[in-house]
Structures are given as C-alpha cells and as structure tokens.
Image (cartoon, rainbow over all chains, first blue to last red; front, side):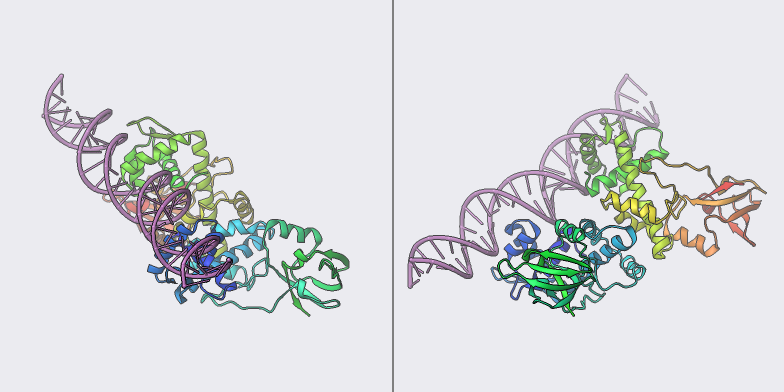
Length: 218
Length: 218
DNA sequence: ATTAATTTTTAGACTTGCCTAAATATATTT
DNA sequence: AAATATATTTAGGCAAGTCTAAAAATTAAT
C-alpha cells in the first residue's frame, strides 16, 4: 500500500516519463511537485525500497513495471473521476482537476470498477486524455498540435496540452470544444497565428493557443 | 481548514455527544478512535486552539457551535456518499462504510451539493441514519428499538443500531430490510426473544438482534 | 584537463500525529 | 478523611515528510 505522498510522486514520475527519454531527474520531480530536490531524494529511496522505481544515485529514476502499474491506476482513477464530475455532477472541464486530485487517492477497487461501469467505460477524460485500463494500458490516439496544421487542412479537436482553468475557459468562450471541426483558412508567417473556421465562425488563433490544442487530421 | 485526523476527532466527539449528557472524556474518544488517551489530550489542545471544542483540563470536552457544524458536515458527506454507493454503484449496505470513511474527507462544496442533487436530496442513509442538511441540522424521526415492542404491536423497520457487516448481512439473510413491516406475535419472557411476522414469514429474533434494530410504531 | 557552474545528496532540524511511561488529578472505597 | 483505584495529562521519543544549508558528484566551460 502506498501513502498519499508516495502516490503523488509515482504519478509525477509517470507523467514525466511520458515525455522524457532518459531517467527522470530529482529536479524535474521537485519542479513538478513544487517541492525541493532534497525531499525528492528522500522519497525516492523509499520508493526504491518498495520496488516501484529503479534508482542509481545521481543518475535519475525510472518506474519499474510495478511502479508503472500503480501510477497508471492512479491516473485511471483521476480521469474516471473527472468524467464522473462532468457527466454526472455538471462540473465544467476547468473545474474538475483539483477535486479529481483528491478523489484519485480513494482506495476501493469495487468503487472504481462500478464507477467505470456507471460512466459506460469511457476511454477519454474531459480533456481528451486517455483513461488507462485496469492493467494500466492506454489507447494512444493519433493527434497533432493545431499549430502543425497547414493552410487548408482540416481537423477535429481532440484534446488540450494545457489543462489550466484560464486556457479551458478561453476555449469555452471561443466555442472551442472537443469534437468540433476546424479548418485552417490562413497561416500568418509573421506571428504564426492562424485564421480558422470553427462551426460557422471564423477565428484568429494565436500561436500560443495553437500550441496547446490537439487535433486529429481529417 | 482541518486535517484528516482533526476531522476524525471532530466526528468522534460529535457521535459521542449524541448519546452523552455531559462533556466527552478523553478515554471515550480514545476508545472510539482506537487510539490512546495521551494522543487525545494532544489533539484536543489543537482543536481547542482552533475553537471547535471547549476544553477544561480533566473535565472533558464539548463541541462549540462551529465544531458541531464542521462535524455535522463530515457526517453529511459520509452519509451522502453511502447513498451514492448504494443507489448508483450497486454497493450493498454492509459494504459502504469503509469507502464512505475515505470519501467524507474530500473537500469540495460543489461536489457535495451536486451529489446531493444527483441523489434527489435524500434525508436518510442506507442504514436509516439522518443526513444533516447544509447547516448541520438533522431531522430526527421517532424510532424505537424492536426490543421495546410488546406483543401484538406492529411497526416498520427504519434503522439499525449496529452497522457492522455481520449484523447487516444477517438482516439480509433473514429478509429484514428498511421499510418492511413487522408484527410481534410472541415475546418470550425467559430470554427476551421475539417471534415476529415479517412479510409472510415468521421469524424468531434474539434479544441481541432486537436491540439493534430500530422500528417505527404503527 | 582543470576550473567553474550546476545538480544531487547528505546532515540536521522542524511539524504532525502517534506512542510509552511517569506524574498528577479526580473518584471511589473503606 | 485517608488510602486506593482510575482517569488524565505531561514528558520524552519515534516515523513520515518536509525544509535549509553544506558537502559531494556531475556537467559545462575555459
């Protein structure tokens, strides 16, 4: 069994490994968890004793298969709860993260299995992120950043890279929701902004926005 | 804001106050929480500093109005989650306690309000216990222990005094559920056991059982 | 290939919440 | 009312998880 703190470390390492190619540094974890490298060093020893990470001093850390499974299960719970909050309790997608952050630590296999069933076995959370199955496997869908599209290409919104309230509320305000079709009408060389058609609307989208919105080419 | 441990102490004191008439002793709390009196002494000082209990050394402890409100809110959350587990996730009434014990500590007013609405604003949990409202008020219903009924009296099951799995599963096995009508056919002087009619069945009920089942006289 | 800069680890301390053992206060007997 | 028993508090210590500051290792730069 893992403490709340251990679970948070495992989750952080799990997320960092998805984008990293080598071992995860103490500093990277400290940064992710808003804590200090010295605290991370301490905790990594405990996790290493529990055989969920491989740790060589000064060489960064890697999840073991067990560690990956434990971490994926926490992510699974987090994302299922997010779906629950949106689908059943009328939360909007910018309100779910903090609550799911608490709910993900509830320990009850039956609870999470029944929740999964209640929600109809969803495969994605409200932000388009994949929900790991019971074994921790995720179904990776092909997606690209909106910023990589060329003029006249069309695509469908499938996810966000930034889940901050500010960004999500901005998308709401502009009527950009998952599943919506986008066509790139113009691509401005100067500032890499895009003119897009979304529904019947035309919108100008800054590069920063386009770098945080995932689409699937159509 | 209160820590998990502080919340558990407040809840324990709240439950003890419901059946006590004077201040709650250190030992009573220690007993309820399966901890030591010395630990309770420590914690009570913290709770006193936070103005949720009144504490005079050696004189027991009492919840302040703030303390009552905080405690009632935890109980509210616990019982709403129990309803959720039974109504939405197909838990049986003997499986809900431990999970609700975790869920009651989740901090999100919106979550609990929306959950309340999803469940249709229930006033009782699966064991017949009242769910405090947002202000901490509870709707006390008139109820008696089955053991207090006399021969030929009839009543309806409305709650349990013991929520242990063993007892609840026993009731399931005998087909005794909340809402069922009971008639006392015989009362045995020797061992205080009862012969009751429940539905079309006749059942012999020991005094211990009758002392743990609440009914409403009809 | 040394030196300098950065990263990581260690050492020591702090807080929370718990414990045991001892001291003190209250309650109960006689 | 003194003596005994019980309840409560205090004192000191321990584990988890964090921190700061210093030491050690690694990486980068000259």
